[in-house]
Amino acid sequence: MTEIAIVGGKADAGRIAADFIVDTLARRAEPTLGLATGSTPLPVWSALAERALDLSAVRGFALDEYVGLPAGHPESYRAVVDRDIVAPLGLDPARVRVPGDDDGPLAQAGERYETAIAAAGGVDLQILGIGRTGHIGFNEPGSSLASRTRLKALTPATRADNARFFDSVDDVPTHCLTQGVGTILDAGTLVLLAFGEQKAAAVAAAVEGPLTSSCPASAIQLHRRAVVIVDEAAASLLEHREYYRFAWDHREIASA
Image 1 (tube, one colour):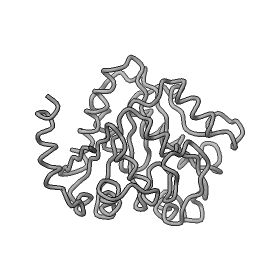
Image 2 (cartoon, one colour):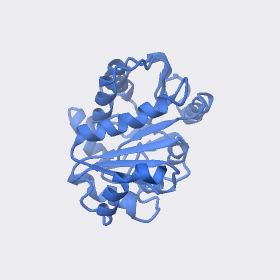
Image 3 (cartoon, one colour):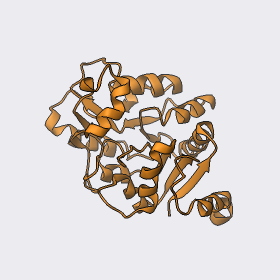
Image 4 (tube, one colour):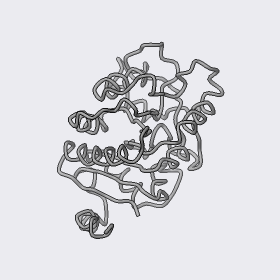
């Protein structure tokens, strides 16, 4: 089953996620991380940067990228990944990819990205956030749970949520390239983070609700090693949260 860690705050969540990443780094000479952007994963990158590790051999694949922003736009996910992840962690920029960054035809960008992930040996650990609509990556409600990297239209709710990064909602792109739900499920480990009461309904639907394309994040229930790290507010609608606390506190015994 999905492991649930209910923590006191973002810093605690970041440290736990960083521990999973460090464990992954120890298992492969050239590990591959799935990189998520936005504010939610920032504590993860901060906690990992504090470890002062040599991450020059790490490969990275971003979850998604806007379509239509000019090259060098500060809110393109290429720019965000470079600013928030590559530079602080000392990653090799040449080993970090975002969808559509190869300047090839847009129509085949998803297929090329899938090929690149496969050539790297797959993603060992994927960091995820979750949207208020239950989306992971930019897989909006209704996305196939078997979907692969592809072009998608963004919902008005997602564009409204992301408008804080732009001058206005009208400046938020209407389309993106995103890894599919099926692509995400191929990763060796999934680590999903969520903070705040506004994410509580989506977290409950993903963890305890039915498996449904109406909540793409519910697909994590199918994964062999998924970890969900949430603060108290984001966990507030979980029916079995006291059991999750007990199971997390006793996970070492369960794995012995």
